[in-house]
Amino acid sequence: MRDATTGEILHHYDTRNEPGEHLLVRCRNRRATVCAPCSRLHAGDTFHLVRAGLIGGKNVPDDVREHPRLFVTLTAPSFGPVHRASTTGERCRPRRRAAHCAHERPTGCASVHNPADPLVGQPLCADCYDYVTHVLWHAHAGELWDRFARAVRRRLAVTAGLPQSHFSDRARLSFAKVAEYQKRAAVHVHAVVRLDGPAGPIDPPPVWGTAARLSAAVQAAARSVVVRTSYSPAVGEHGLRWGREIDVRPLRARPEDNELSDDAVAAYVAKYVTKGASETAAGADRRLSAWGDIDAVPASPHVRTLMRTCWRLGGLAEFKHLRLRSWAHALGFRGHVLTKSRAYSATYAALRAERAAHEGHDDAPGAVTDASWRYVGSGHTPGAALIAAGVADDLARNREHARSELRPAAEAGS
Image: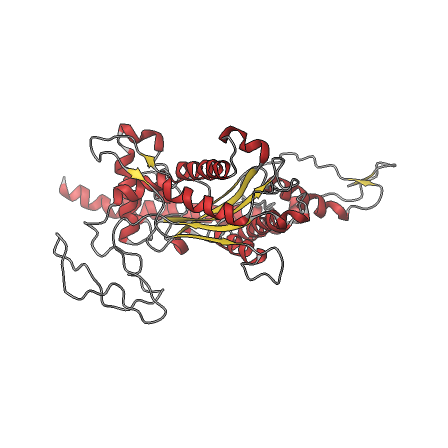
C-alpha cells in the first residue's frame, strides 16, 4: 500500500510473515469433507443467492416475493425395492406371506430400521435391482429437467390461450434447483420455481400467471415428460421419467401466510450443497482413474456396484457421449449440484466480487493498493528443508541396510 500523493510505501506484504511462509488461497471446493472453510463460504453465498430470488436483494427488487413461487421436489423412479428407515416404529417392508425373488432372496423385510442403520437404502436383492437404468437415469437427469421446464412453459401457454412461441413475450419461468442424493443413492431435485414477467424479476407476471396455474403446469409437466436413451445391443433402449412422488408447495409472500418460509428454503438448499459424498451416498469426492479404484472407495456395496455399472456402460460406444467413466464417482450424474436460470437472481461471481470489494474497505484514505506479485522461488522453507534432508538420509540408509542383508543370501545361492 502506498500514499497516492507522495508515493511513500505505507505497508508491504511478504509471505515470510505468514505461518510456514506460505500464502493460503481459497480452493473454492464446496464439500465440507474436502475444505471446511471454503464450504462455509459457499454455503453463505448459496443462501444469499437463493434468498435473493425469493425476497429480493442483490439487484433483485423486493416485490419479487409477490410473484407466484413454488418449492418443487421431483424424485427418481424406483429401480428396485430397498430397505426403508422409520422413526415411528414402522416395519421396513412387511409381507403377509413369505415370498422369495428369482434369486431365492426374501421380497420383504419385517425389521424396523432407524435412519442410521447401514441397511437403509440398500437393495433387498442386488441381483434384481436395475443398476443399468439407475445409472442411465442419472446421466440423463439434466436433459429430463430441461424437457420438464419446456413442458411447464408449454402448459402455461396453452392454459393462457397463447401460441407457445409467444410465451416469452408475456412471461418468464425462473428457477434455482439443487440435486440431492437419497439413501438409495438416487438423485432427487428440489427447486424454487418462479413466474415473472418477460423482463424477469423486475417485471410483474401477467394477470393469468397465478400460483395455482403454475402449480398445475408443474405437476402436469412432471408426469408427462420422458427421455429415451440411445439403443444399445447390450442393454436395449430405456424410457426415463420422473418418479411418482411429486411435491409442489407454494411459498408464502407474507409471514402470516400458512406456507413454507423463504429463509427455511434458502437455508435448506445452502446446507445441502456443502455436504460431502460420504454424507449423502453420492459416491466419492474425487474422480476415479481406473477400475481398481472403485474397491478402495469407502462406500456401501450398493454404491460401488453403481460405480462399476458406470464403468462398464462407459466402455460401450453408444454411451461414449455420456462420459460415464469420468462421472463414475458421482454415480453417472453429470450436473452441478446447484443450477439456476439466468434471471433468477445474482451469480456466484457477483457475490464474490461484492465480498472482495467489502473486504477492501479498510484501505487508508488517500492510499492506493498495488497488487503486483513477483515469483521468488519454490521448495521447502529452511526448517522444512532440514526435515526433508533427514527423511531422505534415513531412506538411503534403510535401502543400504536392506541391500547388505540380501547380499550374503545371494552369494550363498550362487
